[in-house]
Length: 360
Image (cartoon, rainbow, N blue to C red; front, side, top):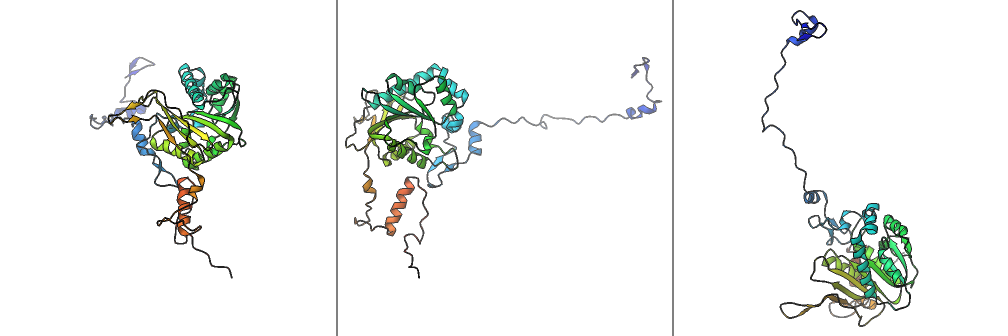
């Protein structure tokens, strides 16, 4: 070592302050490749879902799973976040500037207007899930007056910036529609009602939210009105759940499927009639019918009829006779019907339908 001040060799043996430098430094430990820690690979998305997300089960119907982590498809928007969070300002701008999304939404709204088959005079129409007002512009071009309902403030903000002609309401359709009875002549909905089939919060039950929605929709529509709702069902079970909820509310009608043989172009339209109709006239889906190997025609329009409400009250026993009112079998049947509708009911026990003793 050198003394930097004098550029002379530094004598370490005579310097008392540098005695600690005379001791040799310990040699570093020998390292091998096997002892080095291996870099951990990030887990795959499906592994994270299977490990961190449990399978949710409906609290009122334990046999009905709301969704399973193994079958969870994160490509669907309703599985990523609630509607009011998913449709933020960034997502809302796509519906204002993306020409592809604008074209798709406008075509589906035009198809819904075709299925409504409205008269030539202007009508008062309810648009559920209006979003940025793309479907409302189609209604405005047909000289109709419309009111839009949406849960996303960002989407409604884009609709205000675009200066749409309809009235806008910030509300959750799953909590019910607050309009007066018979206020609207028709109703349309584009890609909205499938959001009601998800439990975004602890108090959300899909069957109950669908029941509240369709009951309030039936009330605010005039007699003989028609509603057309385009949606993307996750599976046949979800489509059946939506259809059954509409039937219990009093609607009649059917399901129209456009391009049933296409994966991307397939569209589902739920066509509903608010009122009694023995033979509902439902248009067929676009594209010709396809004949299978047995020679039968594959229908593209699925019809369902309205069940009379009085038939639910006339319960029949095993022998075919009418069950006495407020008997044990009558109460158990009422509870079973309520559970299917998503209503919270108490469990059956030995005290069910037992008459109380008279007070002293």
